[in-house]
Length: 361
Image (tube, rainbow, N blue to C red; front, side):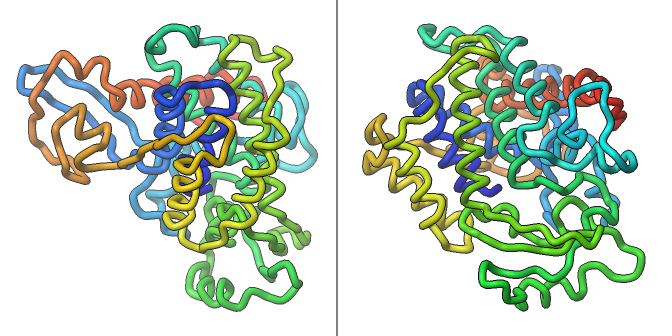
């Protein structure tokens, strides 16, 4: 998924789940920042303090087979959550280990991830600020959860299972534009990573398409249906987060809001994710949803970003410089996001996946 869903749509779902503007903005910012947090390493301050942040994405989204992209600590916990064939812990899908790694929408693994997010933090909706990094981790979890629909059938490793051919549109005609772009991508013994063999097709909300996978199976994808289902499940998950129970009976989205949401998904057809994002922000600002007009904001880097507020830097990449330390850093959204990234990754790789016989750390 791209910024239109991870930020714009996630903000809408958070508001419809009952969060106020401030808290929904945190959740949505984190959901998108998973794709933009590309730097890692130790931050050093002028008073001798240090902080080690982590990355949840790579700067260059090159769909070819590059070793730097084959990073289990990035792709598996944050973008291609293994689905274990849709089976519960203790059961194995037919096939090989790779079949455990492929994404499955709303899998038992994904539900365990939601449960861990809910149980590890207490959130009081009446408190002016959420304790520690609860909302930040929720935003990260919503990114990964949504991607189980978009990335279904693909694995976050270099493997032939991710191969694809005969990409077609809704009319059954071969998508020659996409196929021509792929000609030079996978040559010789290079293996595709994730959904690289179908480029950004899984991430465009409006797209109806099909392809033949690496096992010669024809896969039909209706992104509008998948994305709306993801949003409905996210709303239920966030409502349960608010009450602190993963099994609570909650209402989900109203029929009216769901209709508006689905129309934005289907009708916003610009191939550029940033352009679609602006459409969502305009709809939110105009009061298209039941929570009324609002103005969520997102700046990945530079002035106005969380990183700038925490470190005072506008640089896209950090060198060896020292940053001025302020006590407010400890409670900054940027630090809390990185705290939550590290916590989420550790829990997924070292607690959840091992229950399913998946060793990916």
